[in-house]
Image 1: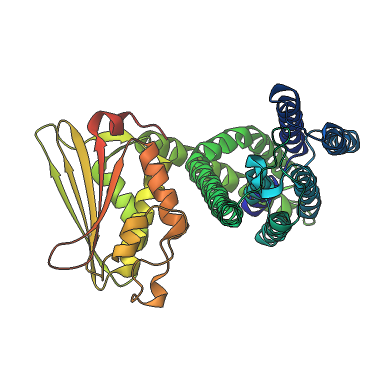
Image 2: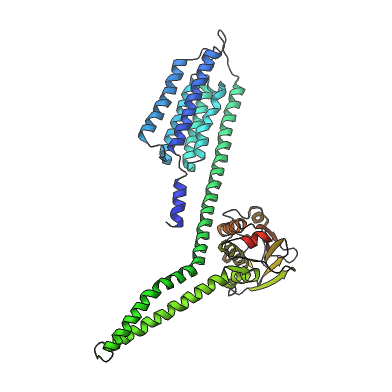
Length: 433
């Protein structure tokens, strides 16, 4: 399964689950029942108990029907979720209508279905439910049964109080719905970005493992190729002078021996590379990172400064190589002519600085850098410079997993962007790929 299919599954998984909806509505049924009984028999208010429980029973029957029709893990389509939540609003509208309208302190619960929808449904469905809720509270502001009150007394809410309740309910629904929607959207973006990070890391680790696979393949193919070579030699002795088959047999033997030579070199190369590349000094790591970016017309300067302990030597880590490579690539994309990579190490920490002579980060980007979808470093940058967005998020995440901390800033005076990556020396030397 490829990355796009995973993203599609993640987005479909954000649909409202039947189990969640049934549990929320069960809580609503229990809460409404307890409230009706408490108001009617605890406080002694003249509440139309039979009418209230008839409406509560409608909600319970709908819950039972949904439980029978769908499995608990079923995910509802947006249209079905909208229909069910719309019925919840209408059921609550009926309860409020017979218990005082907006004078009822529980009128604010009309917001709940809208907020639930905002966390899981598309915008158009949220707008539909919001419109239903606003229409319901608008009707309740003018048409409703009297609020159950003490015997021989009738409570009449002042118009200004009703208007205030209407404004409070509508504004709360709008604010809470927008907040829930944004939190849900950001969580989904973050999940997509983290999934992309996992795919990138798996790909880098897969590429790193190819040397070992080549050695294994060479070892496994060695025996059958040796057998083919022996048989070809025997056939050459027997048919070497045969005009019909002699030339073909010689070709078969020569090609089988050629294959054996290739397998031998491949096995030797893979084994040597495995031993040599398993651990890398910091300078070799930097050279491997910047090598693919030297042919783009930008001068890449490298400077190493090591303390008395010498430069650190760590495990070859695909995440670090990809993360640093992405930062260097961004620097090359935005630089005018020069990118500088500096390394510094001492007994306590390892520092890598990557800076360029471009326009630098805009203030807006600096405040949001590392988010999955920041689009451009500087709005005035050349369009060809590309974006920061998801690639930078992946790089930052992979480097932080290795124990690094990153700081993004602009160079003082000369202009250009600067990225500083710091590891505790012990953490970097212990990192495994």
